[in-house]
Each structure stands twice: as C-alpha cells, then as structure tokens.
Length: 353
Image 1 (cartoon, rainbow, N blue to C red):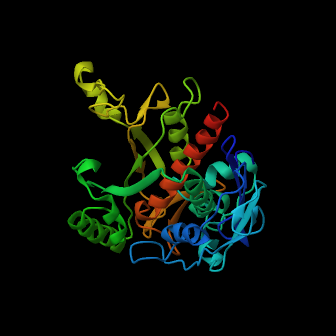
Image 2 (tube, rainbow, N blue to C red):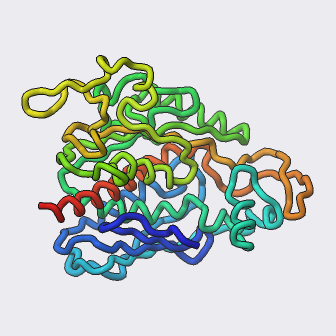
C-alpha cells in the first residue's frame, strides 16, 4: 500500500490499524532545537479522542502518545521523531458480522478488489482512527510555526448553519461546548439535533471552518505547489471529507470582478479578503480561511440492504460504537493538517532566505 506519507521537507509517515496493537508515525525534517510542550501535544490528542462527550463514539481510548526518538531534554534533535499511540479498547467482535459483506459508502469493497484482503475490524487502515497520528504531527508543526494561529470550529451540522462571518465571532468559545461551535445558542441546537439523529440510528454531516492568522507573506509556490492546492489535498485526505473551499469559495463565482477584487491599502494589506489570504498560490499576509465539508458517517445503526462477497443481497445493521456526526472531533484534525502544510512551506521558504 502506497501513500502513507505527507509533506516534502516536514514529512509525516503513519502506520497502524484501528484494531491493531497500535498506531504510530515518524516525522522527518523537523528542525533541531525546537522546545516542545509535550502537554500541549497530548491536549490536541485529547480534543480528537473518542469517548469525550455524549455525541461522539463511546469507544474509550486514552490516546496517550509515547515518543521513541528525535527528542532530547525537551527539544527536537533534528533526527526522525518516532511516536506510538497504543490501542487499548478494541472490540473487534463488533465487526464480525461484516467479515464477508460490504458496508455501503465504506472502503470495504474497493479494498477487497484492490488488495485481495481487508482488515474488516473497524475498517483497518481506512479507519478515521489513523488521524490520531496526524494530530500528533500537527501539534508539533504548530510549535514549529510559533506565532501562527490556527483555529477551526464547527460552522454547520446538517442544515443548521452559522450565518455570521468568522470576523464577527469569538472563536475561542468553540472549545466551551461539545459541538465546538463558537455560537452558544447554535451549539445547543446542534447538540440536540445530533442526539436526535443518533436516537434514530442515523447520522448527519456538517462543515468545519478554519481561520489561520499571522501568516507571513510568501508561503507557497505559483504553479503546481500552490498553497491552497496543498491545503485542499490535506483536507480531502481526511476521512469523510467531500468538499473544500477557501476565501470566497463557490460564492465568489456569483460575483462581479469589480466587487470581488481585493483593493490594496498603502501597506500592502487589502481592504477585503475574498482571496482568503492567498493570491497566485502564495500567501499575502491576510487571514487564510476555508471550509471543509464532511459527509454523514456511513455506518448506520439501523437495518439496510447491501451485498456480500458473492454478490448476494444481504441485510445488515451497524453494530458497535460510532460517531453520529464526525465534525466535532474533526476540528483538531483540520487544524493539524493545516499546520502540516504551513510548516512544510515555512521550511521550503527558509531555503530561499
């Protein structure tokens, strides 16, 4: 299986399965001498881990990260940073009923056809549990970036959507509720809606928005390695993601150029920011902002028809512990992937200076 690494200079390779012994990763290219706050790294994992609230999967995993290399006396050494996150609460028997059948909208069928074998326990390598490794690496990338602020939050669940732009919201309030929505009234409505959906054995999708502040001018390359292209790739590599838009996004296609153009101030900043902080694939110093759309979780705790390995129609019902809505736990994953992209381009940019 190829494609387990991400990044050019700041590179992450991950390994492990949802119901294996452990997941882990190796970070290559992290600069030496970075004083790491290990508690901050664990905090990021705690934001992503299962079982943290009543509206997420109730799998109980401590998701404690253990570092095996690349750190000495609290600082990075410049050598590969190896880490592991042990699985402690697998219930593989919850998946025995799908051993010979394919769940709709999962990777079961394509894995079987491509590799001739699949780990049906929680989806194996295709499980979103793999993203725990991304969060570890992203937490380190955040500390490499230092003054850059990356803040993601839930802006919609199903048809419930925040209408205010991020500039009118106090984004720090997103961590004050289990939905991670910075509007308390909307957060309460979203929470109740997710619980209602769960009670029906169904699932619902949503959107995670992200804002990145204090980004220096000049990150990104103007042809194939545009910053927004790499951000798009990063976000679309996250499980359940169906869409990515930055700046004015799809709405920008409905505007006149005379309205959409970001006029300059004398200091080089712009009066508006429809560009989303990126022009010609390169950061211009304004805020980067984007939306990431997540589909409803494919596993339903209700009966439905599917097919088995022989092509026979069979009846199935999801079992085990699953998220009725992934977006609250996806917030730190979106932040982590954004940090990995920016850290990579930050190091590439240093090569020119």
